[in-house]
Length: 80
Image 1 (cartoon, rainbow, N blue to C red):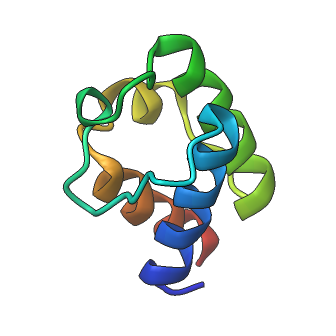
Image 2: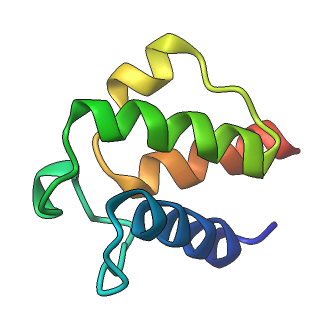
């Protein structure tokens, strides 16, 4: 998957979880930038992303992701 395909998948996942089709994620988006993206939603977001992307993030990764770009980069690395 390309970077854009992963970003699109993550956007769709978060839109579904928050029931908000207006969400547009960028590589620079942080959780604080999105209304309702709290810690509970983040855990669900990561779980769904892992299933849909066919990856498994380490706990260290999940705790250290500073923005969506970091998630995309790690997902790409794990898919190789």
